[in-house]
Length: 418
Image 1 (spheres, rainbow, N blue to C red):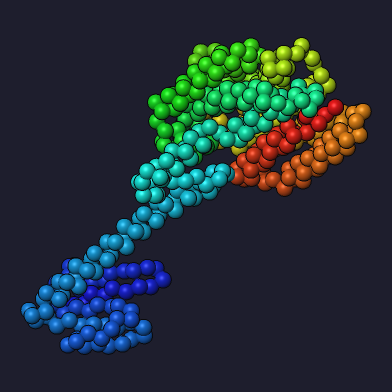
Image 2 (image 1 turned 120 degrees about the horizontal axis):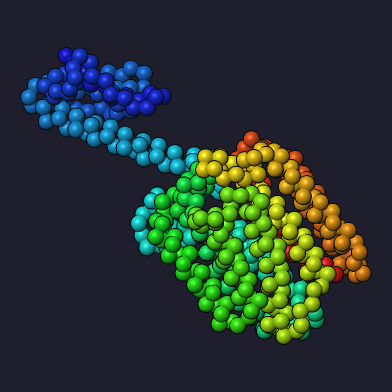
């Protein structure tokens, strides 16, 4: 007689057929189940924790044999399908975990309900908008706008309206710039940032084009109807530089050239943001003459350092994709370690100058806050830098996001410079 054995072991479930290549109900079969109750008219033999059930081969029990055969085949097929799904899900988890970025949601992992569809759409747009740049843009505009405040009565609905107009128009342009960069870098992002919607396939190229086109039009439309020339020119210059930085056309795609790429970022983050949005509040909202103040000069100088650091640091974790696609960044040319410590040294230098500037303030409260604040930030940066594993993309990316947090923190200190 032949036997069929279904058992479980540390290696998982397995099927064995002794002497036959197929199951036949007329043969004598044995079914191996753990903890199966006694069944009527069946011989049972207990060995260890398993029960061997023998089914007679006469024709009256053919139906029972076929029933067990079909049930076992169905169970095995279900186990294999479940294992395959788990393996695919686990692979996605591992890809995200090693990308150096927070794990992103997998839209197909949830039931296709309107609520889940809305959540997935919002999550994709959130990643598409590059939220760390959105936060940086909003904080910088609010901080620089406060430099125009001369007295408490300046904090008025008129001031808040002017700031809100500038923030919304600038965020629309910010989304255009980061979106265009993703459209131009789809293949590179499949290596460096596979979690982004265009690189992952969540967004088609047409969807990306529609988004960036819509947001650029809305930004210019808002800048035009507000009627502030400093704001409109800030949007226009950002548009031109952002386009030239990313788009793959003759004489453009300036990101291929490390120095030019750094100058683009410096021009927008250090000069345009500080001067143009300050003038928007000073001349358009308050209708005052333009005055170049000490805090404004400090903000522009400090953010020049910071913008160069961001321009250099952002390429450190992206070295793999940049090498493949011929982007001659400083990281590709000089190596990750050298660029990393150059960035840290530039920031520490900027903090040192900030401490000296704060110490010269005629106001005690400003002197204490700015000197202490920049000293703490400089110390935290140095401690964090010493702990970074430069062989780990995840560690470098985490440090890059930490640099952005220092960028945010500085905009809380800038209005206190006097």
